[in-house]
Length: 135
Image (tube, rainbow, N blue to C red; front, side, top):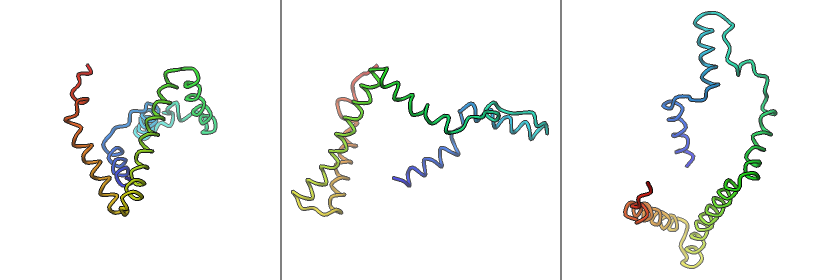
C-alpha cells in the first residue's frame, strides 16, 4: 500500500501541473526576478507575515463550525463514520471467523480475502446497481 502511494505521489509530482494560485504567482515572480534582474518582483505570499501558528487554529475550527451550523454536513459525517465503521468491523470479523471457527492460518486467510476481493470486483460490472440510469 505504501509503495503504491509512493508511485502515485511521484506520478502526481511529475505529470500534474500546479493549480494553486499563490504557488503559481510565487514561481512567476521568481522567474521574472531572474529574467529581468529586477528584485522588485514579488508575489503577495512572499510578503505575507502569516505563520503556521496563525493558520492552524482556523484550519481546525472551520470544519467543526461547519458541522455545528450545517445539519447536512453533520449528517454526512455521521453517515460516513457509520458506513466506514461497518466496513472495518466486517474486515475484522473475517479473520476472526476463519481463524477461530475454521482453523485457517494467516497465509490461508489471505487467500480467502483475495478470493472475496476478486469476486466482489468481478461482480461489479454485472450488478443491477451499476446499470441504473442516475442521470
